[in-house]
Length: 406
View 1 (cartoon, rainbow, N blue to C red):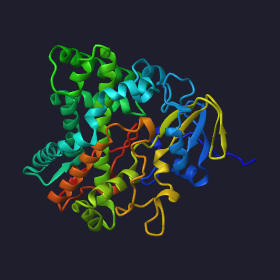
View 2 (cartoon, rainbow, N blue to C red; view 1 turned 90 degrees about the horizontal axis):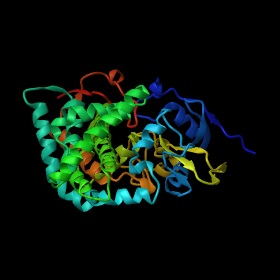
View 3 (spheres, rainbow, N blue to C red; view 1 turned 120 degrees about the horizontal axis):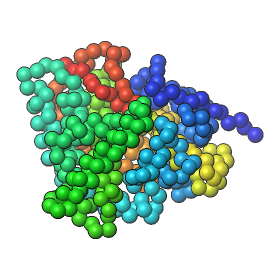
View 4 (cartoon, rainbow, N blue to C red; view 1 turned 180 degrees about the vertical axis):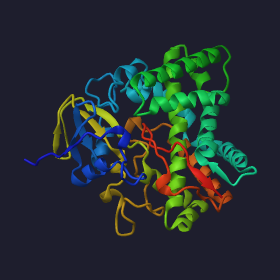
């Protein structure tokens, strides 16, 4: 019988200690180089299965024998201790069908490709306005606070019907909620703060509806306000934090590349731009801590028998660096950025029924934001050496700030 490697517990605050900040955590990369399914020790002393290979991760995320139900005791929690908090007001990401589909269908129409394409002129205006403000009388800025965060925040606020003037409140609460290092009581308080805020907003929209997602959800008599708020929390927090981090990380990575002018030129070509953004999504894959599932029955995966009730963490970050899937003689190694690579099969947005609902919107925002940024600021460069940049580990890997000059 083949021995099964065990991955030691990874201290969450130091996932990237001593490693390239644009790569997955070293322990996960090392596990992927050894095996496609490994045992992993979790910080709370429990263990689970760590799935690193592309085909195996794809199976975990699409096979109904694996559940994402947060109330299941076998579902791995990273960081530990949050099960009860998340189960109290679960979003549809933490539910299985039929509840998952019931809630997801209510908002699917707002994120269809056709609707997102119609939003492109409005997104372009938001991006242009943000750059106008950032560059007015200045030659340096924090790209996160002045551009990467305001753009997706304003877009999701318009879609949801959340007042943009409340952004400091919901951004602070959202960053706490997504943190892997904050004390549990702070995270729980942040979740309740967001729930309370959105319940109140939804109640007002039930009385005075507008043309936005929260108004349409609040108008449904079959949907309690707590479910409206849970969906609102998911869309509001994930809708701006994930895209903001991708804009900042993509910019930092492109500016740090030795062949910088050649790479950035790809963003200026409308025909090449979509493919270039897919490669950035593949290479960076900002959900480094993986997607948790639990086996509902015995499943054979990658030559390993996973028993019913055992937890699984699907590492989309290592799956997106799978040489068999994304390598080949015509491309650079998967650990290097190659904006000419065919990366369309990546799983940066997940896979299966729980795949990110807002992926078309995120793609549009990334394409417009990055192309416009480098077109308008051809002299853009890092204001500090790359090794002085700070990175943050949370549900979405990102950067709290990015000093730049032009």
